[in-house]
Length: 386
Image (cartoon, rainbow, N blue to C red; front, side, top):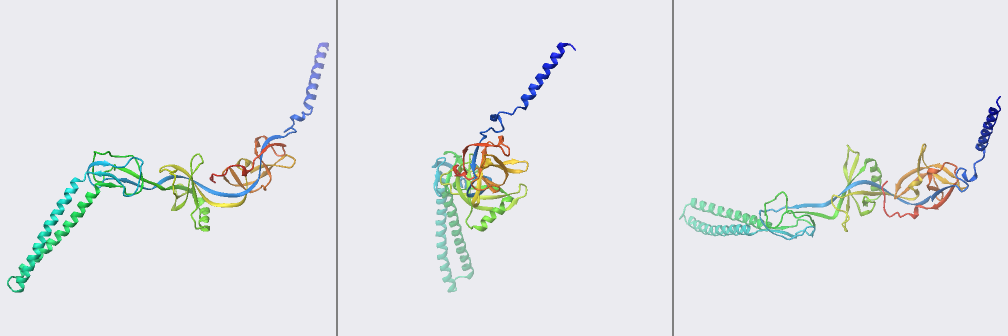
């Protein structure tokens, strides 16, 4: 064999042996799985606290009353006394329609009544005279009956005059437009100087009662048993919170009504809650999330919501052992409230669980806790939905 080929084969065998030896070398301790220090994670402690359970539904704020103020008589709109966005009380004067035509009509009816009263008085005197003549057989009874009929007609005419006076007085009173309810005025729909008609479609202004207000919201039908148990256990109306999209509690009220039927198309029940709205935090037409308190579980076992992980065999949590290794323990979580999950089974109070860094872990891995946060350290002022 050629000496060159022999040398080349020897070199290749030496290189292969060196590579194999290098691969079989143990990895440095610093590069071992997790390292001596362990995987950096943030842990939390399983805590015990009272856990309020809230049901959530999307709702719309509705005014207690909404009235479109329309003139009840026609005429020229002389004055407007309200300003847009003003709070008014029931009976406050909002506008004035020219009253002169209606005042004249009232005086005309009163004059006709006075004329008919005089005619009635004259007819009654004539009736007394005829009765005296008939009693002395100086006049026929037919004339007496005719005069009695004339008196009755005059009396009926006076009643009609009185009714006409009341109608004319009402028309005159209606020239002063008053607020039918207490509330807040909207945009002025007609300016002074325009001609208005009785019950015109656009109206003068819309008054909305915003104190109190209601929220109409829906709940899935499977929540009704829990709500029914709450109502049977306590006669006081359940507490309802109105929450904004940003999670801020805008107002606190109570449940007013559960509708008497379930919407078969959506499988939801409609509910109504009432809020005092003293600070005007709720506005008609506004979308809010309605949270209704149905139960408070005392001494519930809770962990931060991010502790619970989803696995092939169901929910689990990484529990930190005494030797700083982790165990993947199956748990049965309950509802999540305000960022904390109620654990019905699987964890014990005081145990340490991994809150952040689970993506780097596997069962038995060593960890290096970098911090510890418990549920009690987070602000829980705002209720959340189940």
